[in-house]
View 1 (cartoon, one colour):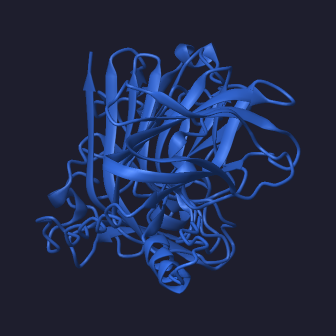
View 2: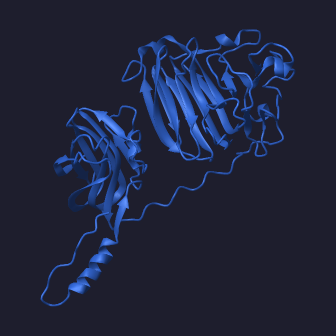
View 3: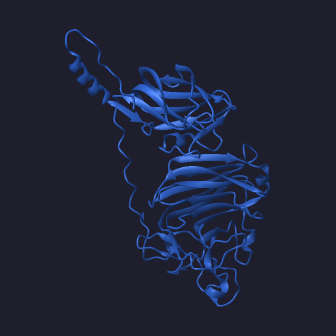
Length: 432
């Protein structure tokens, strides 16, 4: 934090008083990152602007955009006095980055307060850049590449303010779980499961007494081996049931069990059956990417295997591809939720988009495919990719899709642990 020295030499002997005043004033300087109510950018490569206010200096937690003039902008919500700006640069110890700093009191009326800025090229830590103290609401950093290429990549930005308002209070806690769900009902009494089938973490032979080594499935409308359809009262305290708060519980013990095709992991997970009719093959119950297709869920990870705390709570999967288009993965109580996206349906080449850290608290997500655009929302953060643009292959346009939701642990199925995911809301919509 900048500590301004307001004292000066004087023949009148007032220096101690002035130093006391200086200390009082400097104590009003606020080191602010997350008080920026919104952070936006001209573009990004999948490493979004919100990564610069998460307090994380690791290389993957960065904003990156290619080309001269790309910018990242912070809206403080109201006018405050800016003292200086601290910036941490991706690969800051390997190259020099070039930039300007601009400010505005009203959107669009920019003035440059630091022109021709350059990083030291010697550190990945925060570096302070002094600007003239002035009232601002918006702060923009405009990038002009670096000494190696024309990429602009920042891992963290801190805006040091003089006086101003203290950080806003934290948002109110979410409402208690349940939301009117009836704990005395089976999952189908609280959720519409007419177009879903459930995959269990054990084999058909183990669960039904016959059927082979593939994973057991519970289908709707009286289909399959189960006496009770999933949409008409099915429940099993070992794998799928209603919790004491009314949640739909997916429980996945890591005690051996049966996997599915192209996977070495077990799961308690729903698979969407789009426009499926009883008597048809569930493998044909898929939708084209044209139109708008949305999966929305609210859930929390209530129990997890601490040795490898990763589980997928939502997916967009392509038929006839071993690579999921999107896997929404909870990575542990102290890490952010991330979406793992495959660039190509044949070769994969996955990359991640990071979202919010939710711990074991309830959180909401939305996975949407609208024509060739995939949009992912977790909490208040939204990211998107488009087939045939950036890193995404246009081959995805040739596939049909289905949603999945539940608990799909990415941990050794023989580890002896257990995962339990509670859902408080789950719905799907399709429109042309």
